[in-house]
Image 1 (tube, helix red, strand yellow):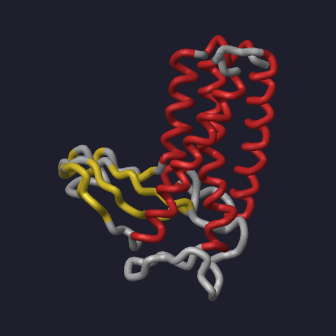
Image 2 (tube, one colour):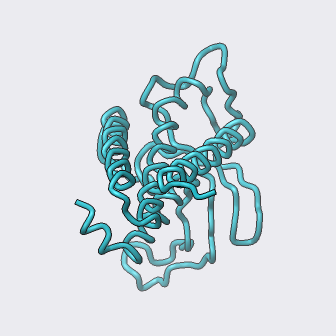
Image 3 (cartoon, helix red, strand yellow):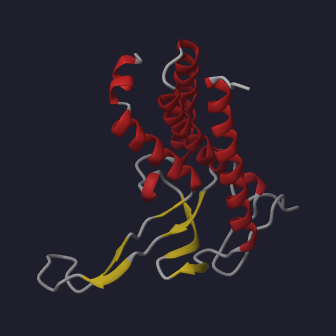
Length: 201
């Protein structure tokens, strides 16, 4: 049986969205803030919450940030629909689907988590649908991150301005499945489908 390009795009979106939200809900309801489980010496499950964009960057009010994410995702969804309708390469469609579902995965956190979860703290595990209500209002939830890869740790040389003598961790960023989906989609797009990108508009 031969499946359509639209089928594969939807399958990728559903698979990643379910995996992303399942892991986030498990982490949120089983771990305290900054709790970590060692998988290997360089890979941890470490629970943090991100109130901004990628890598904790903050540049706008949380409400407007959530609305920006929603509007951007609607535009990506329409672009993905036109790609499928016009019969573009499956690989390129999958790249855009990865970017789209990554954005959606983090939007779910922003829109709903503040209302459906109690607050996570270093001393308290959150509960789902608490009787007293959530820790924030709609569109003000925090994004759940958990993948931590401190590949190696060292100390900045003393001669380095401002940071000399302070600890250095590579790779110190903590991310989730949705973030990884966006990163893989963008990287694959620019490595393999730059011509498809320029010809799709």
